[in-house]
Amino acid sequence: MEKPETPGYIVRHFSDVVPTPCPCGSSVRIFTSDDTPEASFHVTRITDSRRHYHKNTTEFYYILSGHGVLEIGDDSVELRPGLGILIKKGVPHRGSGDFEAIIVPVPAFDPEDEYLVD
Image 1 (cartoon, rainbow, N blue to C red):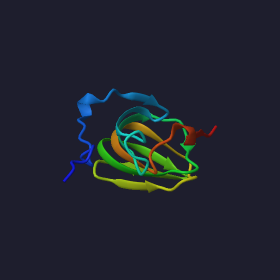
Image 2 (cartoon, rainbow, N blue to C red; image 1 turned 30 degrees about the vertical axis):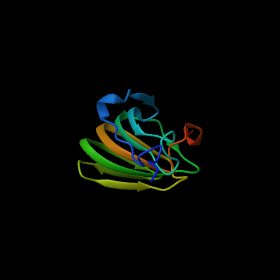
Image 3 (cartoon, rainbow, N blue to C red; image 1 turned 90 degrees about the vertical axis):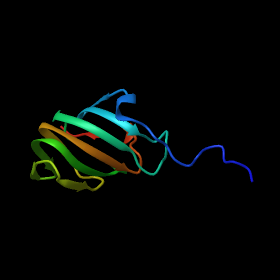
Image 4 (cartoon, rainbow, N blue to C red; image 1 turned 45 degrees about the horizontal axis):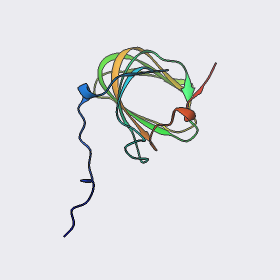
């Protein structure tokens, strides 16, 4: 039996990824669209992000540490560790405070699908 060229999985450590500046703050993009088109996996530090939305992307947030506020549409959500948030495509949002979150964009994050709102 022939061995497959790839093992069908990827293992990557947080410390092996260079942080990327983004409108949200600084993001360690552990898995990206280069790995799979289905989803990305980012650990993002947010202190004061710019209001933006995505036409084609739904985002799942899981707050790891810190506190802040996530403005979603016309609402504000007080953030604390352990909180999960789903932001549907097309909904403007921004974070403020000082917190770290796992963000899972579905499909995989595409910088062309990030639209800033004044």
